[in-house]
Length: 245
Ligand code: PEP
Image (cartoon, rainbow, N blue to C red; front, side):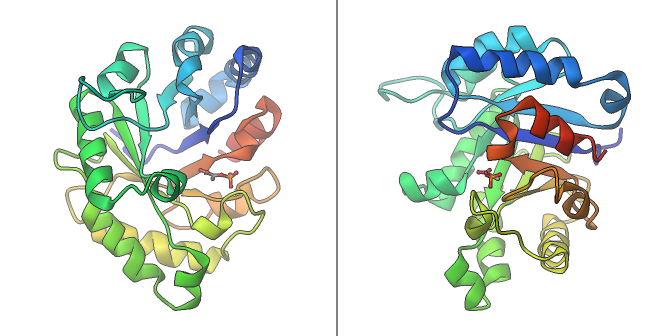
């Protein structure tokens, strides 16, 4: 199998009421046979919409969660387990997004345990890594990304069930993007660090991807798709990004 089949993933973050399910309908309708043959599409809506989104998405468009708890069940008020996401029809879960690392103080070790819970539940897992602006300015990008990777890569990962998302924190929601040269450097570094066994895992770029820059960013060596925030909220922009494949 071709593990490097592109993946275009949308992260809706804390956006989306029931009415937003109409966008799922539009994305599913626009995910035509030609694109289905070339790329995987995934939307990660807020958890309140997962079950309904799975119904509306149909067979091809994948639905995922944005986070999960390391434990399968228990006394953890307000949290969701990977098994619950799977049970709701999700097939992927994002872990270690920089907003969770920042807002909830998530460590690499916690991200790793969440990723392992996702794999154990039978989900594909998207592990996010990326440096802050200060870290890039200090020349620490590869050190930071390398440490996040070695600290948060789950045991039991395969090239099929693991996806890495490189998301420079300063590029998220800012309209700023790294140069294609910088993206190539980090993605090449991640590919090398994944080693032989995971060499065919997909490595997504995320951070201010939009229709106008998607072709350039997706054309970079070792970029196997995108993790898209703001531009995934409308079917029009999300499908325009996916259309680069
Ligand atoms: C994200 O948060 O995963 C992201 C890439 O956001 P945006 O596309 O809005 O920069």
